[in-house]
Length: 579
Image (cartoon, rainbow, N blue to C red; front, side, top):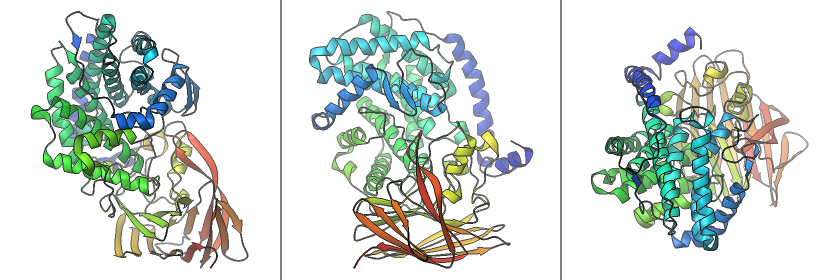
């Protein structure tokens, strides 16, 4: 990163965090060196693991999802990953090659260990085989992947999630009546190693903390709750409980959305805090959530339900990570809601209907048509690590069928060019000059998890239930004004770009891959998705259709198309075809 960018970052989003960030970095260097001298921990008769801490999923949840748990457990037992660009892998194998490191990071969380433990309950005739498989994989992991080295230890977030998964899985396996004295000692020793490294490498980043830090704290909380006979458990508990409660208030915005500028990361943050709340509740006492924290977490759950009701529009990086995955490696919130209902009652299952003002996502609805408008901060306290150049962008569904979409994210570090293309303004359904980004970031790998908003000014206003007005202004580029109106038959928009120089903007519409696009005579296209047909008409510019990509999940990209209308004053409608 050159000096110009470094100065701009230090002067901008980093400025409030500099002193604490430096202190955290020095603390981390010292603690990691000390931690590496203390691992690996040898199994000892002086330690034990508590049981009956995290409850099993509810009988109602098992009734609906039990078959999916078994399918996931059997698939992972056979090494059939089949996602994230990885076909086959077993614990103990070398890291998969030619994939984004984020894909290996997902495997390293060992979500399937909890599925093995639940399979022992569901498939009682083979209880011992499932439990022994769990013990074997934990033992193999400890023996194969040396503590603190390699990809599986590269990300403290993954270490924390794996620590939580391992201890909950062991608890659930033990609850079947199966026992292994040697296994208890090995798991306790491995848990201590995980906790020691997670504690040393915890990602508070001087207060520039994110979902990563929350996952670190979840792992430390699990170690403190389960491991008996280690001197550090009390300090882990104190730190994790205090910081988790603090981070809920910092990472969850007043409207209930997470501070990541990403709907996928909102889902992950909520799941992490819900699993932490469950542990705190079971431990109870002084560490339980206060009333304000409970209210905030319930609001965040309601936002998850709202996003799901909208089809989970892929705002920002669509990372599909969770703290707990019991039915497969794709993101599913059913277990999160099961835990939340246990903790908070029916209130946890309510659905919000209001705009997400602090996050910057507003919703228009009429007669089966749903539109979202994104106009909001880049998140992460101004760092913008998972934000896209999506100011004033829209998504649209009709009768549950996607027509206009956000492009999603398929890569993080595997290709800077591809990542930057997928978060570029010209691959989002907004208006802006195609050769200039809204928010900027340093070139190359150094800028992959940055997006600065220091030159942007934004505003959005709901006129009434059917109309929105939004602006994005950058003094050196120009001002985009978008007016959206929804009716029973469709969506109408007017986009104006007042350029600061001699530039021409493009009004872009990215279509879902399942939409068939037929060019009609003049400035009109027909859009067909299954049994729903829409007409898109425009005036004020010249349109062309070209190819782009859409990623509904990480490490997977599907070809799709987009309409690019060149002009600085474009009016358009997307309406149902027919009378």
